[in-house]
Image 1 (cartoon, one colour):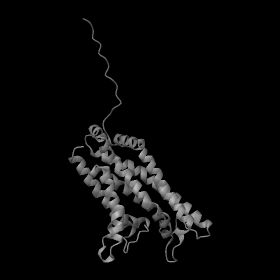
Image 2: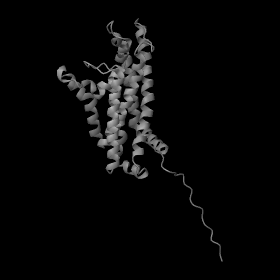
Image 3: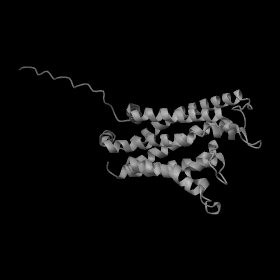
Image 4: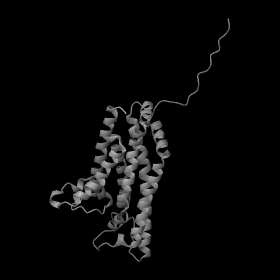
Length: 271
């Protein structure tokens, strides 16, 4: 009888689908996109470059004697109002882009539980935006204070009341903003729709509400941009702004509700 030799089973590097593996895959996809790098560079220029230009002109530190140092710092961080749009684009595209190209079908075929994909995208975006925006805010602060000192202005330190909260709060604000953008992209699944709703929430509605009489705009402090702006001292005019951490909690509430809605739709609707 001839012995039959069994061929060894082919080796494979594939393993069980875990949250860590999904996070690695999402990070690989995100950093492979040119739009991520271009948007990141644009955000850096807007935060640091525009802040330096404002400080160099002396505008940031032309505040009244009753204003605090944190007010001057918040004005030098004016670039955040434009950088938030760039960050929102990154968040929306992180999910809607996959629906546009059809890649989402392959992604969900590999991760049939679906929700780990959403959590992985949140982790990756937070891990990218938080340190980068914090670094930009710190650099902007030191550049602005150096330019102010060179013009003979008063010295401002991170230890001054409210200054550290303003600098760190600006990074926390942008981090929650990118999560809101991601949730809109996952919920609406269309890039144009996601960007339109994001722009309406953070730009159009606050401007329209700001032009209305104050007696009918009691909800203005609870708009996402105004609520989050209370943490970093947004220069937008709000008659009765929320306290810094209350405003940040309201902004986080928007992110939680939209992310929960996106998770529900991701589980209930096909790609």
